[in-house]
Structures are given as structure tokens and as C-alpha cells.
Amino acid sequence: MGFGLGFPLFRRSVVGIDIGNASIKVVRLEGSSRSVRLSYAGLAELAKESSEDKAEDALKSLLDEAGIRKERIGVVFTGYTPTIRYLTLPKMPKDELSEAVKWEAGKIINLPMEGMIIDFLVMGEIDDRNIRKYEILVVAVEKNTVFGNMALFKKLGIQISLLTVNPLSLLNIVKRNYKSYEGNIVYVDIGAGKMDINVSMKGVLKFTRNIYMGGSNITKAIAERGHISLNEAESLKKEMGVRLLAATQTTEAGEANIEEKSGEAVKSVVDSFILEIQRSIDFYRAQFREGTMQKIILSGGAALTPNLKDYLAAFFDAPVVIDNPFFNIAYNKETFRSMEGITPRFSTAAGTALGLLR
Ligand SMILES: Nc1ncnc2c1ncn2[C@@H]1O[C@H](COP(=O)(O)OP(=O)(O)OP(=O)(O)O)[C@@H](O)[C@H]1O
Ligand SMILES: [Mg+2]
Image 1 (cartoon, rainbow, N blue to C red):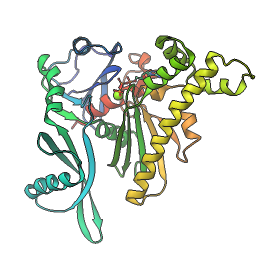
Image 2: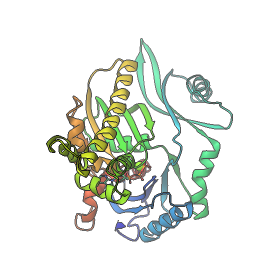
Image 3: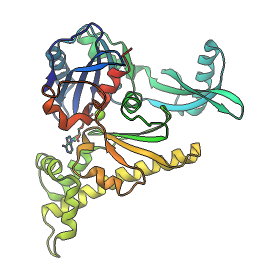
């Protein structure tokens, strides 16, 4: 399902591709970072446990539909998430920096370094007890994982300009959409099979954690407890979401009905989302001696779970919002009307494309 134009308007268009556990998202943006326009947003649902061929077909249809071939294309890492760590190092010449980062990475990343690709990004500078330091983000990933990620695109004859990681793509959205991102911003992406919990400060990603748990865990829990099919459970989840919890409080004693059982199932999964987010915040606060969180931003399909936002808001001190990655991007409201309800699913793809804009 795609929205928008079947061709790029300008030569200078950029594309972000996000292949998730449940769906493929493709976003094309045009213009410059000062004046950017959405010209295509496409989403293909992947059947559960669908084969690589199916994913390839689905991606190809979206790219064909949008007429994408020669644009600058950015892709987000799929599958096993790379290790991402924040560190600081005293300012030094660029050629020395790369050696120093590798050395530090070896100390903080608990993985054998051979067979790994280490990349880094200088995100900012700080004063640390009168020493000027770089704020650096190190990304470590196995070579084979990188090749695996490239294989699909090679097969389709598509050249990639950027291979990036979800927390950095989403950070582009945070910086663009939330004017006051100066404080501690927690942004959580909850997809079908995984959840990325990130904390940024002044536009610098400081903490990120990846947990293999997402919307499909809610569906599975409902199906198991209610003895209903996954399809039925998925519909019930989308219709009622966290509102199912109310059923556990209102029904009278006796045999629990499906809604009541589902309520308990939803609660158990959503409470573990909360626990993981709280743990991450606690860890971040201890490590960086930080105080309050300014905002919690949700993205990914599971962010659409009815009442999830309010349920989370009751637990955390910070306001909770659901992301709309296109909030500060111009687009034709009519053309993209049916996209409006599902925009958080495009956050990663949109952020990836934004990263390529000049
Ligand atoms: N309206 C909705 N209400 C509740 N859940 C929803 C809704 N729409 C989608 N979801 C859930 O969101 C998940 C899919 O979201 P998304 O497309 O962001 O995942 P993905 O990016 O493919 O997965 P991942 O990030 O784990 O790789 C599924 O679990 C689906 O059930
Ligand atoms: Mg996702």
C-alpha cells in the first residue's frame, strides 16, 4: 500500500527504507533540509514468517510503485541489531581519532573484535573538567551481518548510499519535530518483534538499548490466554488495546470471559514494556547523573495500540506523545489522507531519508 507519487519531483530526492519484522516501509523526501516535501510513503505488510523472497517481492513492488531507482537511498539495519555505545575522548587530530576509538571500543564492547566492522560518529563536543572532549557514538557490527543486509539490494540492483541504525534515524526525527529537544528525551520504537529504547540529550544519542519484544507479544499473549486464533487476537488488540484492561476490573466473579483474559494478557506484556523503559531511564540517569526526562516519544506500529500512550503516561513523570514523523514535513493532505492514522510506523524510514538530505 503506497501513498503519493509514482515518480520523483526533483533530482535531489532521497529515500529511506526500513525492513522490519512485520512490514517494509519506504519513504521518499524531496528538497533540502530547510524545505522538505514528502512525495512517497509506502508500506507492505509481511506475512508472518514470510520468506526472503516474499520480502524481496514486497520491496520491489514498493520501489516500482514509487519509481525509485537512482535516488540516494538509505537503509536501516535489519535483523540482529548492531552494538551502539556512547563515549567521550579528548579532542585530537582526525587521523589519530580513528585508532583511539577502535582502542576504546575494544574495551567497552564485549565482543571479539575480529570479524567486526567498527564505525563511529562525532556527535558533539563537551567540556569535562576543563578538557574539551568529543562525544562519540561507536557502532560495532559483524561483517557478515553487513553483507547480509546488502545482499537483498545487490540482488535488486539497487545502490545504497547509507546503511544506518534505527536510533540514529529516529534521532533525526526528534531533532526535526521536537523544538525543545535540549533536555533528556526518551524515544521508544516498538515494532512487532523488537523495541529500541533511546535517550538523547541536546540532540546527542547517549543511551540505547534493544529488547526483543514488541506488538506481536501482545497478540500472542491474547491468543494464548483467550484460546483464540492469532488473527482474532490481532483484531481484538487493534480494536481495544489497553482498554481491554477495563474488562478485568468490571466483570463479576465467575468464569473469566475472553475480554477479561485478554486484559490480563495485555497488561502482562505492556507492564514489561514499562519495566524495560523504566530500567533504561534509571540506568541512564545513574550513568550520566541526569535528572528528569523531558518527554517520552513513541514510534512503531505498537505505539498505535489503543490507550497505550495514556497507560504509559500514568506511570512516568514525563509527558508521553506518539510520533508523527511528517509533522514538520510538507505534504499534500489529500493524497496522503489514508496514511494519517499510521504515521508512527514510518518514523524510522522517514528519519533515514532525512539523514540524507542536504
Ligand atoms: N492500530 C494498531 N493497534 C495496535 N497495534 C498495531 C496497530 N497497527 C499495527 N500494530 C502492531 O504494530 C506491529 C507492526 O509495527 P511495525 O510495522 O512498526 O513493525 P516492524 O517495524 O515491521 O517490526 P520491528 O520494528 O519489530 O522489526 C505489529 O505488532 C502490529 O500488530
Ligand atoms: Mg520497526
